[in-house]
Length: 141
Image: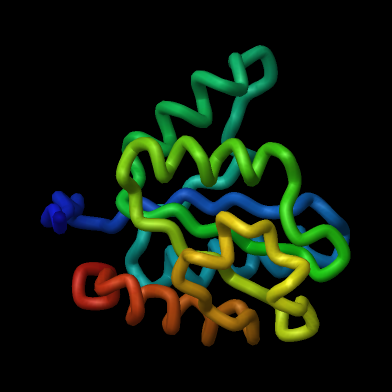
């Protein structure tokens, strides 16, 4: 059963990622690239101190048109990423994993292996590929 997504004027993209030094800088550049290409991006850095984390995540997931997980090479996914993946699936959200080239598929969490995958390259190239395969590129300009 296929349902047509209602997408806002600027696509809303929720980015989930492993918080390691090598990954974090790339993720912020990737988010900036998505924004330059016309998408609104939510990162957990937007959570204000004192905000209940679960509510902030749920609210942001509900508003999002697309959920993106940026997997790390050393730690493919954290417990929070798996929580966000499960919540996104429960809400019927589209989910795409961005995977580093050096990460073997066998090291990916099994639920994420069934999602669509974009190989990680430069932040801008990855952003353009992600928007293209998600069908959001025509809306994000």
